[in-house]
Length: 101
Image (cartoon, rainbow, N blue to C red):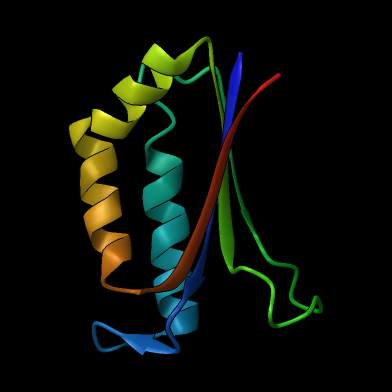
């Protein structure tokens, strides 16, 4: 099984919205992916705890797949690509790791 963890920091302002507004929209869009990509076995969308260090990432997606082919299907899925395009305009940073569990 492959676990894919990707984390983003968001810009303070982007697309005419605050970070808080963009974060809420990103969470909504990310959660919508769960039922659209058949290869997803487990999927969580989490945000940094309000009282946690502000230098932490703002949002993380934690995804499990049977294998790398499942991850590739997810990454190339049109809904995932649309989500990525949305994030590209509001993100400040990104970190990702894929590992076997």
